[in-house]
Image (cartoon, rainbow, N blue to C red; front, side, top):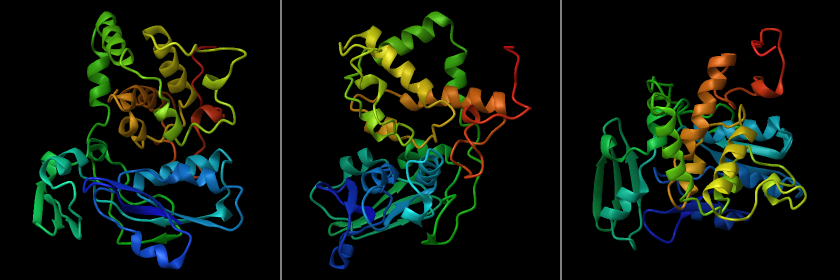
Length: 297
């Protein structure tokens, strides 16, 4: 089973891999369970038996992504869905709580988050502490699950999820170029964004190929830009908008902004939901219908 366990600091919750009944007590669920656990399923696809995985609403779209890409089989996976009312920014928790403290209880309301430790109860308002990706949440309740652990949370209207994209689109070309040059120049080419992405599942990644060499290993603006643009187009129409690329980037490049730009264009062109919303809704760039736009022909 793949779930969550306390990390080395109070603000950290880490993936937990449970194989024995006496290990179950390690598992936790609280507003710091941020990681999308879906991609760990790939490590078990050739192992005997079944594997269970805990998923939130946004994570469940990644499960569908893996199923549609034939990376896992439905019979192999037991999906434990947990309706999620929203997650807390771990940076704020780290700033206010003793790193060595342990969370013994947690509660989430429409107004705030409450975390209880041996030192007392700490409260954070949702306005200050709600994780960025949760502000635009489409599905609080997983879209696919074998067992739902908790009452379903109806979807709300998060407003326009593409406000930041539209703001950037309105800038002159030179300013947009300067914005992304500034972002990509900081990239370390650590490939954390690729490694965590549930849409990046190629047996041999184009960026690891020596012949032909599509992107050089040199860390400079030109090669970094090529890396990010190529990767964004490789996941076009398949990105489930889970926000993991933003979470793992060590230099905080807003990669979801780039992916959301393409997601916005895909939705405008094909009038489709966010990829992974439905097992029956195939990726728009991986399927064909007579109603597809053909202005380019």
